[in-house]
Image (cartoon, rainbow, N blue to C red; front, side):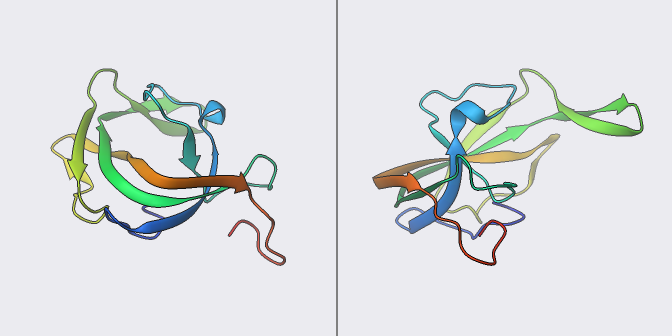
Length: 126
């Protein structure tokens, strides 16, 4: 959400483009994770519109290390350094907590509907 999303808080009605969590490549598992926000998809295949009311917000922090790679360096999560905190608003937390940095938000919703997204003419992915 940080680069392409709109801030949100508990009680807000949201409408997000999401993908199935099965499509995520991640170094950790989150029990009950069904969908992931995606503002950077290349095509509309497998994109859903998720609507709901924000019930709870948790922020997932991780420590990253710089790993040399051919042609460039990569940031890689350091195992077992994560921390999850709860908040009332996506804007109420800092990007960093000591050596940890925000990796994502875990959001619980009420009144959820999920439908295949319909492509908006003239728009790549919004």
